[in-house]
Length: 463
Ligand code: SF4
Image 1 (tube, rainbow, N blue to C red):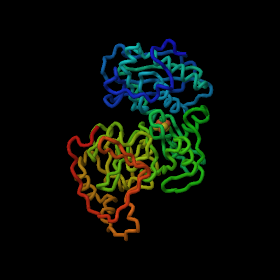
Image 2: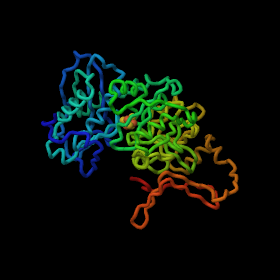
Image 3: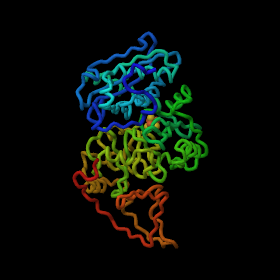
Image 4: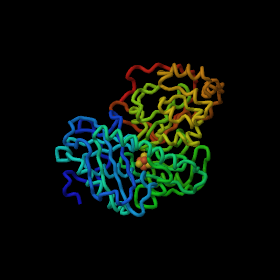
């Protein structure tokens, strides 16, 4: 099927990582502002089936080691195809392009990041035409409802910018269409296991009020995908019994997570970053990170390039959050979830948010309660934990009340006071790694001391 492609093509290559030293070039990624992938459903007369077009320099004309503006536009037609399915088809670009040996595709929509390895380029993968042929074949084989399809690769910066703007509007319209329905009104959620090639224990649980972590799949998309491609990566999850309406725990979700993660994850709270939070793969649009020094959450999105108020940039925190684990206090989220009334519901929602980039604060203006809006700091207000603390006190942010609560000493129970539990605690000691599974740490005495925020040292904790 792929005899004329110079590299191997197959599911075995999904999950392949290409480090900077091994990359020939990259398309999109953090160093490029404008990049996108977009699928559009058109009428058949507007599509030349099988056409592959490259607008701008092809791979062979780009320099080694460069980061380039980039867009993929896929146009499809078929009697059963509707606009509502575009988002679902678009997400499959991630899967199918990763089948190519020596191609790494990360993220989605306006955040795509693709690397071509030096080895693949040396083997002859020097034109987008090869990638286009693979996409055409895989899309049509896996999704027979596509009758006609054409693929356009854009690398000309002016054309990328032009269609990027259009694409942003289309993504916003899609997200807006998916709002309104609540989690209480449905009996079925949807799960997505597409990112298991990179994060084996991860599934996204997609509900009407909790958009997928990548921000690319709504509950409506999930429903459409499960119906047109029942053997695909998106599947229905019967909600089952609601075990905790505040944290968002459902028996059907727990059961499904257990099955799909092969027993690794057996309990999920959909609306909390603590206890048993939703797992994070690596495609999340943003991170909600707990700041213990002020007992509140910071939010950072992938496009924010600077260190956040805790001194760590997105990339460093993403490393600690990703991989399909349940990491308390570091929670991968989509930006659309920030528009949901369920957003961190069990942890205080926006009343617990203390910092976020100004760009996101502006975008979420309508969703942040009016009485909290001015109390949330941005990079324009503060740059250290010390100044954040002063800001929150001055603005009388609700978290300040928590600092003043009297600490009541409880009598220590027999066997010690349980102070820490975790499913996995890694310790590196004397050249070996010790992993404590289901750890419980107890203490005979607990001393509580007020913590003075420290100014992060320059470069501390960065990747
Ligand atoms: S982030 Fe979640 S919904 Fe998006 S592709 Fe990955 S598993 Fe699927």
